[in-house]
Length: 136
Image (cartoon, rainbow, N blue to C red):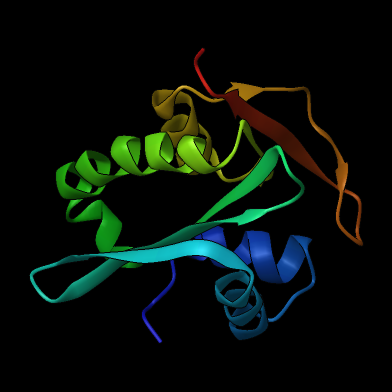
């Protein structure tokens, strides 16, 4: 398994109390589409989207330590992938750990809107909801 960025690992294993391998396996199993970003043979990120209902999609991404080495390649892939997700779903929604400031900056750059932090997961840790609606 690639070396997952510590902030992503903390969000999954500490805040959500889910083993990383279980979270990835379930995420991949429930995906409408799953992909990876590979640069020079190194996995930079794994991502995908799953269907919550007829209108809502749930985007997810787990980055590796290599994302910091290849930020431009990572960012070039992200916006088109989110646009493609919005062809499958009217809106995208998920939650992000408030401690994961790099992910929050990236989601903001992508154009997601954020709500106020709220208790989330089994420990009730503060997570920000984020969402994006398909342009009409």
